[in-house]
Image (tube, rainbow, N blue to C red; front, side):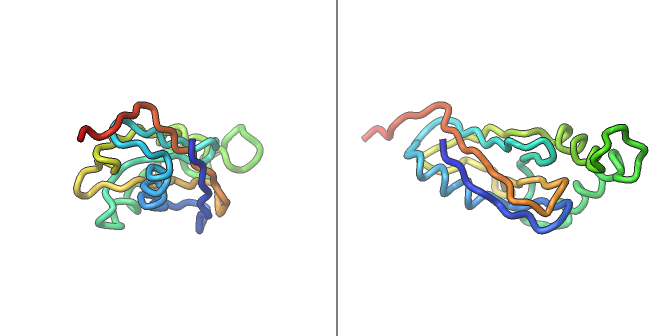
Amino acid sequence: MVRFQVRTPAREALVDVTSQVAEALAETGMEEGALLVYVPHTTAGILVNENADPDVGRDISEFLSELAPRDRAWRHGEGNADAHVKASMVGESVLLPVSGGRLALGRWQGVFLAEFDGPRTRELWVVPLVSGSRRG
């Protein structure tokens, strides 16, 4: 497992971590298989979506805020209940295909850390689940 940290810039943000995940993949030495990217936090998530147009991320963040507004009458007393709900909706992990030692993402796809209770320093865990070697 490879771990790395990401400093998030605001209370809510989608931070493109594609390059950091690719670097972590390189550290594993895996050539073929699947890579689990996991966020061990209850107020952050991880997702794959478009990384070409920043409006997509803004739309996602705004929609999640409509579904779980910060100012709702939540029972959780820490003031971050909306962050817990948003993180639950997004999820704490993604499974990514690996081919030829590289992430096998679609043309417009990127991997994003979804921050809902920042700014904070978050840790991501990258775990190779299936590995193989190149045939030569």
